[in-house]
Length: 155
Image 1 (tube, rainbow, N blue to C red):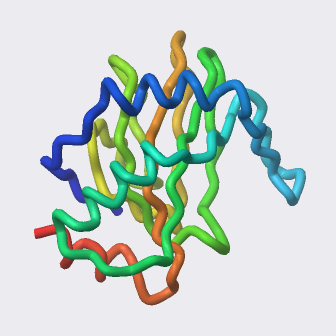
Image 2 (image 1 turned 90 degrees about the vertical axis):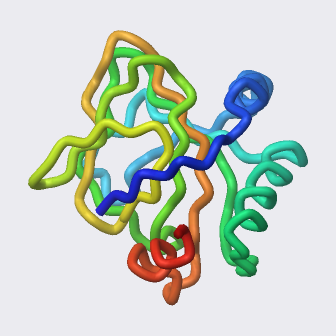
């Protein structure tokens, strides 16, 4: 469900880009209406973040072009409810950019991480904290790029 990574992303640059991109944020809504995603934002990428993602992929010799780069922002005192990502998200590299982040919770465990490969198709959530949580993400979209397969690339 999670594989910790030691890769060093330029977090200061990523955080600065997130602040700029927040001006054009997109609020996430649950299409089923079953979950409350209030206070949860998606920020799209730009040339800088795309370049940083490409550097990561090149470092691990990952040649796929079926991925997206974005940020997820959870506002302070808001939580991301239990869910499993669906179409368009098979697994993701998550990079926590804020201090003292909330852990990701899976059905059987709670995990704190800095940078990790996450099996986003497994049920997971993030509990509310008294501060914003900003995550930079590289999401693999090809059904063949499962958590298990991508994990093998990240040696």
